[in-house]
Amino acid sequence: MAKNKSIETLKNRLREIAYFTSISAILHWDQEVHMPKKAIEYRAKTMAEISAIIHQKFTALDHDKLLTNLKNEIPEGKYSDEEESLILECWRDYSLETKLPEDHVRAVSELSSKAHHYWIEARKQSDFSLFLPCLEKTIALQKKTAEYLGYEKSPYDALLDIYEPGMTTEKALVILNDVKDFLVPFLAKIKKSKIKIDSKKLFGKFPIDEQIVFNRFVAEKLGYDLDAGKIDASTHPFTITFHQTDVRITTRYKTEDVLYSLGSTIHETGHALYEQGLIGNDFGTPLGQAISLGIHESQSRMWENNIGKSLEFWKYFYPKLQKAFPVPYKKVPLQEFYSIINKVTPSLIRTEADEVTYNLHIILRFEIEKELIEGTLLAKDAPKVWNEKMKKYFGVTVPNDRLGILQDVHWSGGSFGYFPTYSFGNLYSAQFYAAMLKDIPDLTIRFAKGDFVAAREWLRKKIHVHGKRYTASELVLEVTGEPLSSKYFQDYLTEKYSKIYNLKNK
Ligand code: CO
Image (tube, rainbow, N blue to C red; front, side, top):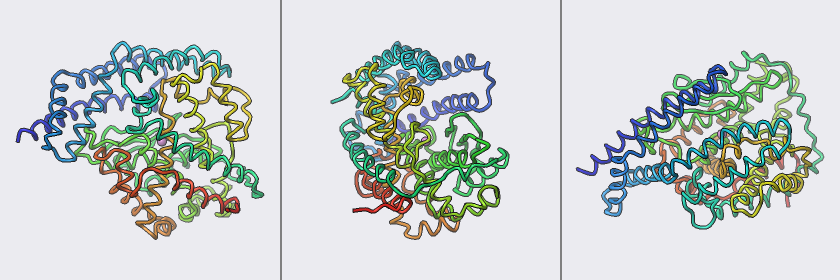
C-alpha cells in the first residue's frame, strides 16, 4: 500500500502548512478588526515572516519530489478520483507558488504597497494622473506574471485563471457579452417604467447595539453556527476561516440604515455557510477548500439576493424587523418595502449597485482590464474609455475620477482578472438557485415560514462538502446538468423585475 502512504504524507504536510496559514489569517483578522493603528508596520513584518515560512515549506525540495512522483503516477490509474483531484490541485497550488521568481514576487509586493498609497492620494484629490505611473508599472508587472505563469491565447487568461481556475478570456467574453446584450436594453426599459420607488422612507435612527442583535438573529436563523463563528465590524466586510470550527465574518454599520449592515451580514453569512460546510477532516488540503472565488461568491450572492431579497424571505423577517424598529417600518407595508430594497438605480459606484446594474459595472471593468493587459489600451486613456462606457451602458455621466475609475482598490493591488469572478458568482448563483427550486418545489413557501434548513442542506450536500473534488465547470454540470450559462440569470431578473416595474415583455 505504498500509494496510500504517499497520499498520507502529502496530507500531513498540507495540514502542517495549514496551521501557519491559520496563524497568518488570525493576524490578518486582528489587523482589520482590533489592532491599534500604530502597529501596522510591525504587523506587516510579522506577517511577511509567516508568509516566508509558508513559502519555504511549500517549495521545500522533498515536497517537490513527493508531488512530482504523485503526479507522474496518475496515468498509471492507481489513484481514486478524489486522490487525483487532491494531487492535481496541490500541483496547481505548487506551480503558482514556484513559477514566479522570488525577485518578481518581491517587486509585485513592493509596488502594490506603493501603488496603494498613490491610489488613496489620487482618489482623495480625484486626480488620475497621480496614480497613472504606478498603474503603468503594475500593468507591466502583471504582464510579466502572465508570461511566467504561461497561457495559450491571451496573457489575460493566465491572470483570470489565478482567481477562477479553468476560465479563459474567450469563454468569459462570450458569457459576459450575453449578459451585457441583455442588461443594457433591460435597464433602459426599467428607466422608462412609470413605477417610481421612494427609498428614503426606510431611513431612520437605528442604535448600533440593536442592529447587532438583529444581524445576529438573521445570520443564526439562516444557519450560521455562531459557536463556530463570530460577527465583528470592519471597514470592508469580509469572511475569514481559520478552520471549519472558526469561520468569522465582519459587517459594517450606519446608524441611519439598518439594511446596510444587514445586507453585508447576509452576504458574508453565505460565504461563512460555505466555509462551515466544508469537511473538517479535509482541513488544510484542497479537498477541504472552496473551489474558486466565483463559486464562493455564488454562495454569498444567493443568500444576499436570490433568497435575501425575495418577497418570501421578508414575509418571515419583515414582521420581526418592524417589531425591532417600529420607526420607520411600521408605516411601510411589506410590498412597498420589497420594492424599495429591490429598487434599480443606474449609479456611479459598483459597491452600491443593485442586482440589475451590478454586472454592468463588472463588464465595464473586465473590458478595460483585458485591453490593458493585452496592450490594446494604454493606461493613460483608460479614464476616457471608462467614462464613455458608463454613458453607453448606464446612461450616466461620470463627474470626476474619484467617482469613476479611481473608486476600486483592485488595480492598485495588482488584482487583474479578479473583477469577473463577481459576475461569475451572480451567474452561478442564478443557475444553482434554479436547480434548487426544481429539487425543492415548496422552497419559497418554506422561506415564508422561516425554514431555511432545506436550502442550506441542499447547498451543503450539492456544493459545500465537495471542496475541490470538482472543478468549477464540473460542479456546475454535476449540480445543474448543463455548463454555466447566463440564461438563468436573465430569466431570474426578467421575472422578478417585470413584476416590480410592471414591464411588458414581448
Ligand atoms: Co463576497
